[in-house]
Length: 68
Image (tube, rainbow, N blue to C red; front, side):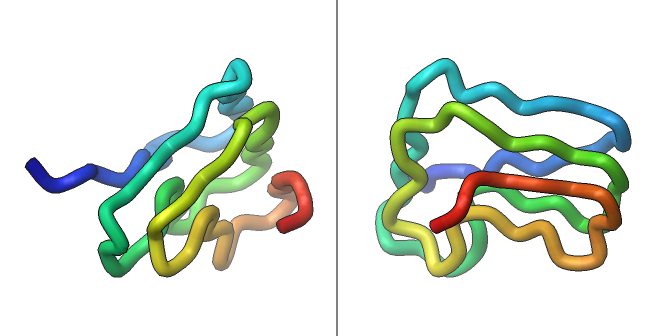
């Protein structure tokens, strides 16, 4: 089974990982992908690992995530 990224489909949301880890299988793509929605906050993940990109917030004004 291939791990699926978490894809954001709305503006003005907070994604709280509650200390959990998202683990891929060294696949291409992002663990969390935002295709352009605004004002997204991503926080409190223990780790996002084994993806080409952990968090993709490209073209996402006023969005923030913890530093890598």
